[in-house]
Length: 263
Image 1 (cartoon, rainbow, N blue to C red):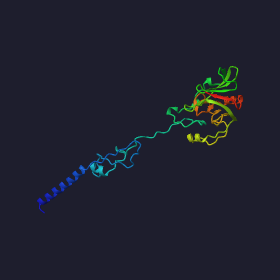
Image 2: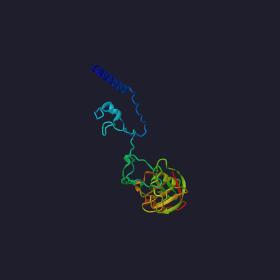
Image 3: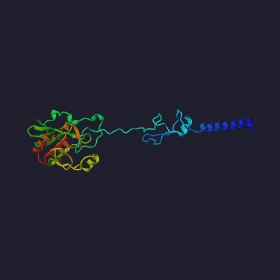
Image 4: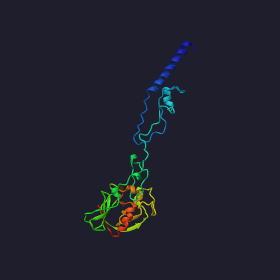
């Protein structure tokens, strides 16, 4: 074959290779992947262009056939959110009327260290209300329970009351009294707090405390507590809680049928 023929053949081959490369470069770019909030990230590694050289030639050819380098600057797409760990109390209350909460991180404190306010100590005070002797008056906003004496006096105790949305008012009577009562959470409470025990016998660890006085046919009770640091706070889902020494004192002063006015 003549030198002229070889030169023409080589020129044709180079033009063919150039046309192929131009066709590849002219191919439409892949549509970008759109990730919406809430969708999981793609699990497959992303193929990207790299300025590094490799055995495959680097650049455009590596973009076509190569994976992103392990540990390099091309990383797998991450989700648009990250789930935060759930926070909680240092000691979670097992209040028989308490629903589940999602406290903030700053609430992570030991409430048992909160000093007891002296104003919630049992004391005899003046009473100028209209209720007769032997009536229990529950002052929900101020977190006091009064046992009217009938001589212009009342015995006043500090109490814990319902959280916002769980307070109530009305007139009831004491329908039952129990010492060291057992506790069986009702189904609706277990739905809110599945971590609660299904039954607990009476005793020092029982959240109903040393005594309980049941109010009419409701689930509400005046009861003791193994968490005395909660007295003076909005803590329950409607029950009225007292310190054990106070509920024992009140229990001995009132009988079944006593009138209870909750305001």
